[in-house]
Length: 497
Image (cartoon, rainbow, N blue to C red; front, top):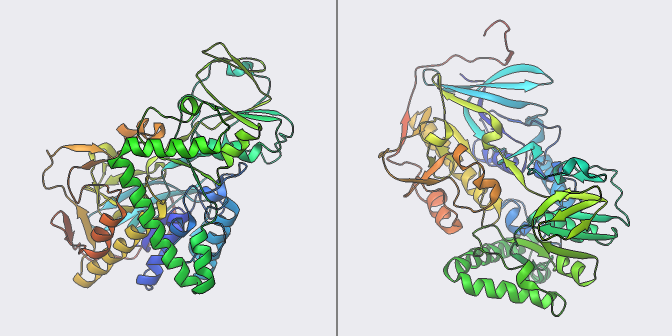
C-alpha cells in the first residue's frame, strides 16, 4: 500500500480546507500536507505590502464550516491569517503539515495504483507514495512576481520594489511613490501608503473597474444582535453568495448598464470635474476581468484628499529620477512599486507522468474543474474568478470526499477521467481576460464545451453538480489494481529504491 491515502500540496486556504473535509468525512485515512514554505497561510503569509486584504467578503471567502466573527467583512491579511491559524489549531491540521518541502515531480503507476512523489527539503531529495494527489497550491509562483521589461530601468537611482518581495524596513514617509499597475494590488497599496508618503501616483496603462463596497456588512452586524453567531453567519453567507451571483449575471447580461452604474459610484466619490472616463472607464465590459474592490471607497478618498493621483499612459523609459511617458510627461519618484501582476504556475510547477509517459497539460481537459483527463487519482483546487475563491474550493473538497467514499464502498482504487469524444472542440482553461492568465494559456489544460468538461464559474450550477448529483459519470472510469505492498518514505538513492 501507499504511504499515504491522500497527499495535499500546499498549506494555504485551499489546502487547510481540503484537510478539514478529509478529516471530517474520512477520519481513518492517512494524509499529509506538503508546504514549500515555513508557515501555513499561503498568500496571506507571503505578501507583506501595506494594506494587503481580501477583495471578497470573508463570509464567503472564509470557510462554510467556520464562521467569520470579526466585524470587518473585508479584512486585512493579519486577520485572515489569524483565522487560518485558528482553523488549523482547532482541527489539529498543522501536525500533519511537512514544512520546507517542495514537490518536484509525481509519477502514477497503474500497476500499483499509487503516485510516487519526488520532493525536496533542505536540498535533499525524498520520495513519498500516495493513493491520491490533491494539489491545493494556488495558481501562481511564490518565488517571483511578474515584471515587464521597462526601458532604462537600470538608470533609476531610487528603489524599485515588487509587492511580492516587500522589504520590511521600507521607509516611504514623505517620499514620492509611483505605483505601476491598476489591479487589486495597486488599488490596495495606493490608499494604504498615501497618508504617510509625500504623494502616491498610480500609473496605469489601461483603467480597471473599481467598485467601492463597505468594509463592514451592516446587515450582518445587525443580525448578530438578534441571532446566534453561527446563524447570523449562515444567513449572511447565503445573502452574499446570492449578491455576488446576481451582480455577475447582471454584468454579463447588461454590460452597458453595469458600466454606467459603476461609473456613477466612482463619480460620486471623486472631486467634481474629475476625469472619470479617462482613469476609470475600461475598454472592456465588467467582469471580462475581475473587478477591483475598494473598501469604503478608500482609493477615491485618497484621491479626493490630494494624497494620491492616477495617470493613464504608457512608460517610454525610466530616467534617473522617475519615468518618462509616451505623452512626453515625466513623473518624478523616489520609490517605484511594480504592481504588475503574478506569474501563473500550474500545480506548483511539479511535473506529472502516468506509467512513464509525461503529462502535457495542454493536451488534457479539465474534468468538473477538479481533475484532468487521462490522469488517475489526481485532483486540484482552483476557485472562482468571478466570486469568492473559497466558495468553489469548498464544493470541490466535498465532491472529492464523496468520490473517495464511493470508491471505498465499491472496492475501487483508481478513478480516471476519459473523454468520450477526443475530437470535440475545446476552450481555454479559464475564460478570463486578465493578462497573467493570457500569458500562459498555452501552458494550461483546456476545457470542453459541455459537462463534465466545463470549468463552471456559477456557484449554483456547481452546487448541483458537485454537491447533489452522483459522483458516478460515464466519463469517469473506475478500476481495481492488483494488491499492493506498503512502502516507506526514503531518501532518493537509498536502499529500497
